Length: 297
Ligand SMILES: [Zn+2]
Ligand SMILES: [Zn+2]
Image (cartoon, rainbow, N blue to C red; front, top):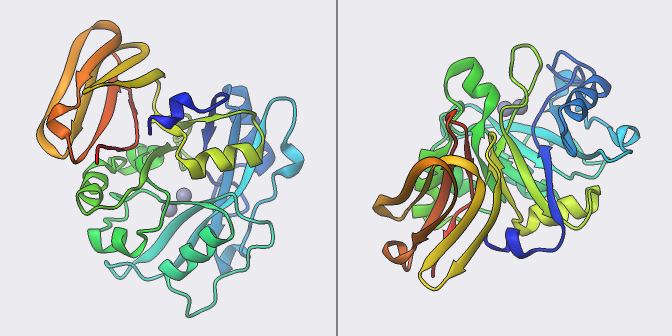
C-alpha cells in the first residue's frame, strides 16, 4: 500500500467498472468514454457483461484512446454459482481482446483464474449487493482486489459498501487490495461516484495495468491522498482538506484525527502491530477515500 506513494510517476484517475449498450448500459462505449473524459478522468475500462445473451462482448475501446485519455479492455465475467447459488460477478480489467467465453462447466473460480492468468487485474465486485460470503472470497483468494465501494449498488439499492466483507477477508488472511468503482449503466445517476487513483509513470494501458497489479492505487469518492509515509511506529498522512483521518484494523478501536480542513496527521500504528490496518479519510461532505490494507507483519 505504501509503495503507491513512493512509486515513480503520478496518480491517474480512472473508473474500472462500467457498462455500455454492448450489454445492459444505456450509452454506447463512445458516449461512455466521452462522459468520463468530460469529467476529467484519465482512463476507464468498459466492462460489459460477458454473457451469451449479449454475445460475450469484450467491448473494444482501443480506437477511443488518445489526447490524454486511455482505456483498458475489460469485462464483467459470469458463471454459476456462488455460495448463495447465484451467478458469479467477477471484474477483470486488462483482458486480451481474444479472451475466450466460458465453457458451460467452467466454475467462477476457474474463470477468474483464467482471467488472472491472461494478465488481467481481477476484482470481486459489489460484495454487499451480491451478498457474498467468506466462502466466496476464499474461492477467489488469488484475486487482486475487492470493491470497497460500488456506486451503482449504493445509488440503486443502498448496498454500495464492501467494507465488512473486506475486513473479514483480511482477518481470514486474504490480501486483497481495495478499489472503488461506479459500475455505471447511465440509467440512473450512477456515474462519477467512486474511482481509483493509480500511480504510474505514464497514462498508458500497459503502465496502468502494471501499477494495478502491483497494488499502486487507492480508492476515492472525492478526497485526495497526497502522501503516506511510515515513520517508526507512526503513519504520516498528507491529504486534501478533510474532517477525519482514521486508521482502523485488526484490533477493536481506531486511531483518528478530527478537525476542520485537516490536511495532515500523524497516527500511531502501534496497536495494529503484527496485523493489518487501513486508512480512511472523510471530507466535510462525507465523501471518503480509502487505502488498501497495510500489513504490519
Ligand atoms: Zn455485477
Ligand atoms: Zn457491473
